[in-house]
Image (spheres, rainbow, N blue to C red):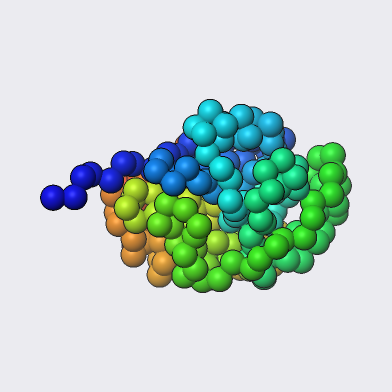
Length: 214
Ligand SMILES: [Zn+2]
Ligand SMILES: [Zn+2]
C-alpha cells in the first residue's frame, strides 16, 4: 500500500485596499508554492511562505482587476517567482494606473506578465489546473485542485453571488456559461474560494445561487 499523500498546504487571507482573497498553495513534500492574486500586503505573503518553509515558484492571477495584482511586482521582486495571466486580460494589466485612479487607490507600477496562462494548463503546484472562465473579464480564470477538492473562483462565483459584468470587457452571457459549463461540472463537495468574502461549497451554489443554478 502507498503511504497516504500529505494534504496540500493552503492558506487564504484578504489583502490590500479592496480585501481581495489571496491564496497560497504549497506542496508539503517538494516545498514549492504558488500564490494566487496577491492584491496587496506582499510582506505578509512572504512571511507566510517563510513560516511554511516554502519556495514560491509562480504568481498566478484569476484576472487583472487592480485589487488582484497590486502586490505582484513586489512579490516577484522579493521571491524571483514568475507572473502568470490569461492574455485576454492584458489590456487591464496594462491599464493599472487608470484602474487605480478610478478606484482612488495609490498606483505602483507592476512589471509585465512573464507567461500567458492557457485553458486547461497544469499549474506548477498542487496538481492544479487553470480553467478559462470568461465573463467578469475576458481573461478570467478559475483554478481547480481536484485532489484537494478546492476551487479558486476569483470574481466569477461568490457565495450566493456572481461577478459584476459592468466593468471593462464584462459579458454576462459568458459569465453564466462559464459557471454552468465549467464550474458546475466539478465536484459538488468542492470548497469554493471566492475573490472576496467567505468560502462556499460548490453544491450549495448549484442549488441555491440566486443568479445561476445548475
Ligand atoms: Zn474583479
Ligand atoms: Zn476583485
